[in-house]
Image 1 (cartoon, rainbow, N blue to C red):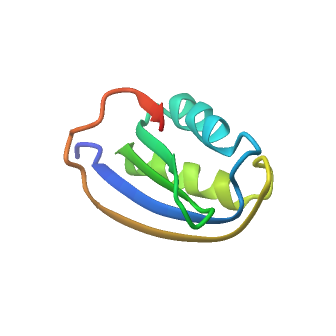
Image 2 (cartoon, rainbow, N blue to C red):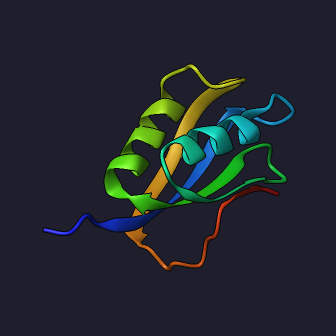
Length: 93
């Protein structure tokens, strides 16, 4: 059985801007072999898109929710769907 590649789309709410959260998320994603991006939203949240193995995406979500990230994560709204393959590397925009 082949490993499944998926896309995680998440909005992370809390104190997640101006605290290094996007760069922390990039490091975690790269460590897990994921590609994607993290972007600040106008409402103070961070939009995160990551693609890779389902196990890596689940671990990234676990780490985001763990309380070990910079700032403070109050809520994560996440969906997982089929990967589009449009990501190369991990960018913080």
